[in-house]
Length: 278
Image 1: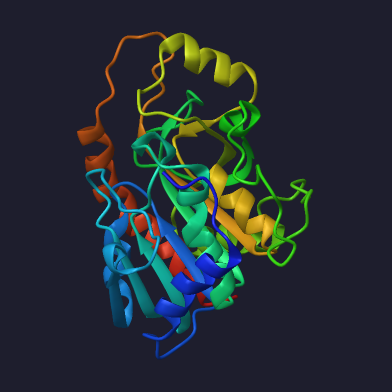
Image 2: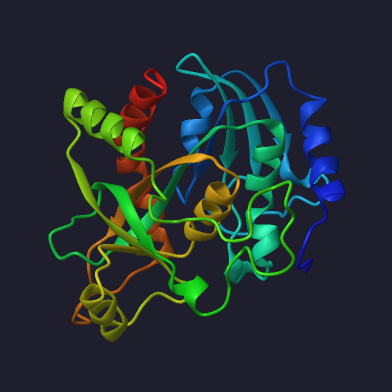
């Protein structure tokens, strides 16, 4: 497990990717559990397995193919992560967020991040799409902030502001796009935990009481690093399972993957609509 990367190591990975590109990406997308099929929409793709890219961590979870797909999507040059890695897989925060650093060094300006998330808000149903308006970094508050350690000034300032972690103009585009496409769009606060165990009913009631609407095991570290890098961020949660606030149902990973089949067409409409306007 590598706890930090030097600028030279980040650039080594970025240079490997750059050397294989026809078009330099402007927009990065990170696709969460069960949502990777959106990468199949990329035109004239250059596909790089994560295993070929220096220092890039390998996905070990079902529903994460482990490919970097680069090409055009809705006319935009994009870099799509078909699957991500998580802290619970045994990686450090530096490894979890290395792909965002590589995006930064390649010149990516906008990050669209998606995840499969559990509902905390009792009004949310599996198959809903939630626009992330803010997040609670529970994992960061516990000491696992991805910016911990020496700051590399060439990547960003020591104390980045997080008051607008999710770009307001991009949120407006997502609302307009979803409305035009007839895709109902929930809105709420996402909370990031470490995983891999799902939450107890008491956990969920606590998280609800502190203001969370959906919960997952990713996204927040990547968004923190993206904002440190000066990227604009749009976040979307695909609600994969109902709130289990009182312990009367069980949650499984297979349920999350199945929900992805319903969510991908909805997310596709929203994301492609946003890409056409940025």
